[in-house]
Every structure is written in structure tokens, then in C-alpha cells.
Length: 201
Length: 329
Image (cartoon, rainbow over all chains, first blue to last red):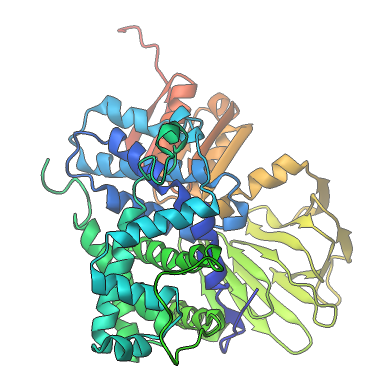
């Protein structure tokens, strides 16, 4: 565990390690969570799925990763609570819907299914998303992530300002992040027939 | 329906753009003080912003892992001349992230004092690698000295996962009681009944301060010691009970056959709305359920439903009562 002290002998837990945990154990469930939320909150136009996910992540982040035994269930339950809170706050929703959200039947058939992507599938998905990026945006991203260049080096290489590089990278990250919101559609090369098994994405 | 329902700014997508910019910047370089201040302000403006940032940061980091999966396979884009592959600056990125969050939390760490609000559970890493999780409405003072790591629990409850170091014992003092560990996991809490120490792993020594009334005792895994005013006592808990009692660390309260009254008292620790049960037979009824910390309403509703009761709001209180079989009904 990498830690750094401040004057009071207190440091913050290794942030990178927690981010990696988050990437490994939480993010893979996001497509299913979104799908489930969209189904749950159908007709409630004012509920923003992005916001519910952000809220759920903030709460999950505040918790203790090691003590959450089933991240997937925990994530869904947290999201359900958030929707419930928002509905209650709105005070205009049918009582039975709220009551439904209140119940904590953690074991939900929709929640149960999850298949982790293989490394090759993950790689293929990333490349598929990169295909959709605007050219400069993609170039900056590849120089950063495939060639480990600093923003300054990318700026020199592409002949653009560093601040522009940052804009390209931020846009690339956002588009990659958007691409991961959905399960890949049976996705890459010849796997279409297996799409039933691409449940999580 | 259009307004007010989302209880947010309704701009989740916009927030994601901002989060992406911060994630890219923080991974690249140290923030200038003015940037840090803007980031702090942005994070403070809405709790969701942290969630968006965590999402963006972890994705950005995870791309490295995915890219590494493909290393060895041919890349279409040739590396440019003169540019060599630098080793991944994880260590630097980590220290930047520390700076980022360190500043955000720094204000509360004055003189080693750390506190949590009611209903708030936070996890802290201590400089030696130990991890402290602070329950709601709790206060500790961290005093690390050369020859010992000293934590003073002023109020509430804290759990510790102690990094092993024989040379520098880890001592938690609560209400005059010293709990001493070398490398172990344990929980110390101050409540109405006295000071409670529960050991999850390893061994701790419990004793009063020098010359105090309580002689040193050793506690092992799943043992609990209570320094009550009526005298000290020791109990052996079963593992499930220890786990249940410490569910607060994951933001949950778990009840598995506890009496409703005790369960309500537990819920009340995390909520501004208080659960009240006036009917003594109801308070003794056994209850099961899992609740998010602070969700007193959900608890009250579930308890009422379980016992065919009802919830009556009385100011800031939620009174759970059995349904009245009044003659008029």
C-alpha cells in the first residue's frame, strides 16, 4: 500500500489502488446497471440515469471496498435507494412504485447475470470505440495511451497547443466512457451469434 | 414532473465532460493551487461530481491495463522517432491523487483531529499503512510518536486494521482504557454502556492507563471486551455477529433476529429522524433486514410491515406502533 504522510501522521489511502479496484470490480457492471435503471425508471423523464450512476459511484467510493462482498448487488441496491430517494423527494409518484423501490429484495434475477469480458474482448471493444473518435482526438489518445507521451510531447508531435491536447484527451475519455455505457452489441468479429451471452457487455 | 424531480441539475452528461477534463489533468500533472481550489469547489458543489470523477479517473487508468493486454501485438501506428516508451508514472500519479484528495480533506485534519457527522462513515489511511474506519458521529485524535502510534477515541466508534510493527505499538485510548495492538483488526466504541472492544483478527491487550483500575487482558479473534461502569466483562461472539456489528463500514445496517428496540437504537445512531417504539412487546420482537445507513424511514416502514403495525410521524420522530384494534373499525 503506497501511502504518504501529511503533518498529522494521516495519509489518504492509496488512491490509485482504489481506482483500480473500481475499474476492475465496479465499472464492468455499469452497462447492466444502466439498462436496469432505464427499465426501472421508464416514464420518469426527469430522472437522469447518468446522475443516478454518479450518485451511486460517489456512495460506493465512500464505502470500504474490502468489506463489500458483492459489489454488483451493492451497486444495484444503492442505485435503487437513490431512485427511491429522488422519487420520495418529488412527492408526485404513485405510492406503489415507491413501495416497490423501498423493498430490499437484493436477489433480483436481472442483477444476477454477469459475464466478465476476456482480455481480447476488452481490447477489441476499446479499438472499436477508438474507431469512432474524431481523427485528432484519436491520435492524441493513442499517443498518450499507446505510446506513453506527455501532453507536451503530444503537442510537439501534433503541432498543436498543450491545452488543445488536453481538450482532445478529455473528449476522447468522455467518448470512451460513453462507449462503455452499453454492452457491446454482440460486438466484434463473428461473435454475433453469441450475443445472448454478452449480457454485461 | 418536469422540474424538481431529479433533485439535481439534470446535467449528468455535462458533469461527465467536466469530470473527464479533471481526470485527464490530474493524471498528467500537479494542479496549480488555483486549479485545486476550483476542483475542490466543483467537488463540493454536488456529491455526484465525486462519483463522476471517480468514474472518469478509474476509466482513464483502466485504459492502460487494457492497452497492456495488447502489448506484443502489432500496432498500426508506428512510434515516432526519438520518442521512447517511458515507464508508467504510476507513482507520480499516485502522489498527485494524494495531493488532490489530501487537500480536500485537509481542513479537518488540523492537529490530527478527525471527526465524522452523524450518518457519515469514512475510511482513513494512516501514515504507517494502518487503516482506520470512523463510524458516524465520532471523533478521534491521531498522535503518531516515534515509539508508538497513538489514537485517542473521543467519541463514537472506530475500527482499525493495523499495519504490523513490533517496534511501534498501536494504542487506542478510549475513555481511559488503553487498547494495544501489534498487527491486527479491531473495533473500539464508546457508548452508553461503556467502552466496547471487539477483535476481528489477531490479539489485542486491553488495560487501563498506568495504575488504572482495569488490569491488562488479552482478547482474541471474535472476542469482545466491555469496560462498563458495572465492571468489565468479556464475551465470545460468533463470526456472523461480528460481521453484522461491523456492517456499518460498508454503509449498511444488518439485522438478523435482533430485538426491534435494539435495532432501532442502532438506526438512530445514523439518522436525524429518530425511531421511537413505545410498545415494550414490540420492542422485544425479533427483526431481520438490511438497510442503508441513515434510512430511518425505510427501517420504520419495513418494521411496521413486518409486525402489521403502522408508522406515525411525530415531529422529527417516526413512531412504530401496532395497529389499534379500535372498536370503531
